Image (cartoon, rainbow, N blue to C red):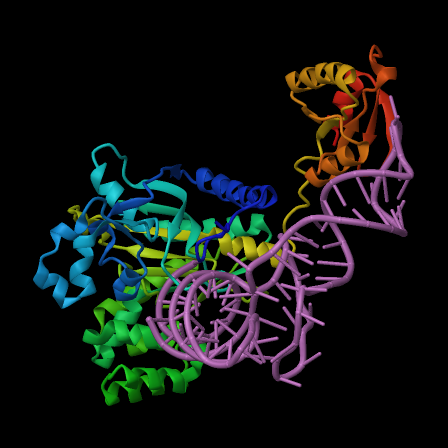
Length: 449
RNA sequence: GUGAUUGUAGCUCAGCUGGUUAGAGCGCCGGAUUGUGGUUCCGGAGGUCGCGGGUUCGAACCCCGUCUUUCACCCCA
């Protein structure tokens, strides 16, 4: 058996876990400062909880879990013979790994609605799974860190979430651009263009503008079989440039479009005040594929790194109604932990990690010496100092190498001359400097590291 | 899901148009050095050439399949 990892998954070394925790600690602090409380939900849900919430593409990427036992007995011959994967899925799989944190959260809110104080604010930092094809910054298992508010349709929630993005990325040292849009503006555009029934196709096309340009978008619209009149009109709009002012004129006839513009203006005006490092921009091409968004939508890109978005989110006015709870609006944002990690790594923004620098390794010189050395270790550990005894009386070179590899800051030597001594030599492994210290001296030396 | 791409020692990679017992550097283990490392020198271990088929007298090398890597598309964190 040759050891190997499943496609799109990774192991994390001690150093990597410590860096991830660095990010999570900053996010947690910002979440809790604003009154978000932590919750967790299971890794897998009933399959019907997840399917149909993310659009067709999303459903395809949900990891399904095979039924245990003889699932073939539940399939009749006729269904089997049809070989229709969609129809067979529910017979073969009844559970699925979570695809994001938002839908399980909506389920949670509905299920616990009587216990919760609304508006309910929570954060969640857990892995999610997608049966995607891995790429740069794209994995099949990755962490999302989400903050959501449910039970308030106030636009102040949007404002707070933008501030939360800004404060978090500022503390991480990342310079970002926060793009915002409103799905009602997009819906208003579709309405005025007379293509409301092809709204999704329209948003898919418009989302590509920065990548393929005006011609590319129009080509995509034609490929999606949108009416030529709409394509031509929209082409003219794009040529003129679509600012908020211009959209106000164009969408005058659309009540939904107007509402979207009012919301957008409020959010932009309130949120832009007090931003520390982020650039907040209105971007009418921002669409986001997740089906459940209805109002404001967000997406965050790191400046100076070529990486997909490192965060995203939006307003979902009615996600809980699928689970039977009406008129409950929610809004939330997600931080992509793994991509933030890659950005910080690429820009060299992690603080120098010296996690084990404040630790002492006691060299092992043999049976008699190790007894005394272990007494020192036990005493240090009892005083809250990281200390350990090298287990074998190996050659000193090997013991040094072990300490180096583990990043341990100090090596203490208890040899035959120190069996009864109250002071022992302690060597700083980084500088090579060696001093003879008593117990208190070692404590203050290591604590100062 | 579509189209490419990658896979040789623990790591990074050589390996000419298919031709004997597949190599290097680093790392690892041992020794020079039985109480002070990161230098140097000497010696050693370690490989079903991703996996499974096929073509051939002969395959790391050619063909097919499969898995994995990376990338573009799709979509997305």
